[in-house]
Length: 263
Length: 263
Image (cartoon, rainbow over all chains, first blue to last red; front, side, top):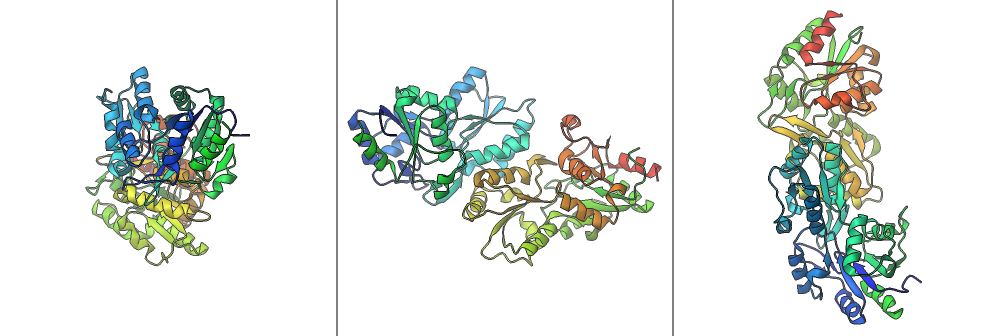
């Protein structure tokens, strides 16, 4: 029953389309073909990613080089959502993010910071940079920490890596504050992705490898959600105490097979 | 009333005796003289520190160079306590600690690790080292994370630094485990310090700059505890929702004045 009455798909990227890595990453077998079949079928498609290691332009360039037929307009990512939030609230960020993400914040006033924006800074997660972000926060009368996601870890081609959520928890604890999360699993973020997809929640399916951020987050917005057994999927996810996907699939290709059969 | 019937003092070190720093640190005015007066009075004294950036030998050498009349036997520190715990439970650690602490673990089998021991690794808190510790933990059937303290931050001469507790929270979140804390505020650690002091809890006073680790921890063991207004003390500590010291003092010298007047 889970595959009925679908008009659009939200796809997580890392772990669903490809396994990311410093080497540029490796496509997951069948995923590029699956994206082509989704588009050929007339289903709508939006990538819903917490990727914060590159601008959307560079991210799409990388995906296209790996064989994925996707465009910048088809990417919903945390940095543009964060820029909207900063503007709305008159916040001037100190950025602790990946060098390649910095252009997304080009239009934002960063003088005399009154908040910290934390992304998956990777090699920029140095002891010195973490201390600097911490000192800025602890020096604020009311520290404002905005985190581009709260993932625990992700898988790259050379192994598992700590994700932004781990560093968010470090700063939260040190400053005794709660971060505001932009990106999955925030409800507002999924709602933006659905708006960009142009399909109501009950006609959309989210497909991801993260049981909490992808599956749990999407379900809380009234979507169906599948977990793929690729990327950072671990068998113990199937015993998660709180989140249960609408279905498990071995990979994106298998999900698309089933969905297309039900069109 | 807080200064009556005292036979021994437990002293935190960083922020009470001196402000630590890469330059070796700076003694807090009056503290070296206060240590001499404690000893001359016949009161017992034990340093109760979460210091994990050096062996006790090097730590004491540094303190003596700053003018403090203390010996290795007068230092209760987390690393030796962790070594006892590892031995009792047959645990073989992967160490993510400061280089200078490694000799404290010389006698411990570190082959084929089945736990991670986390200390204040300072410059060793690199992205690569944190990922390595994380991968070891997430690869264990039941991850065991032992943390030498859970402090949020401390003050060095060049500014505030994130302490081991922040990195502990990062790994706890990423691995969905709870660390076992050796060091303040663990009850077992204060009990070791009291045993080494040779004075029962009700006749001992803890003096520290950390409202939670020093004051809260000691009070939970039945001791009185003072917070000094030096080191990382912040005025907002005086509104802490859970912990209230038996008294505030401006510094160690002032505490010792009052205690000696009541002998």
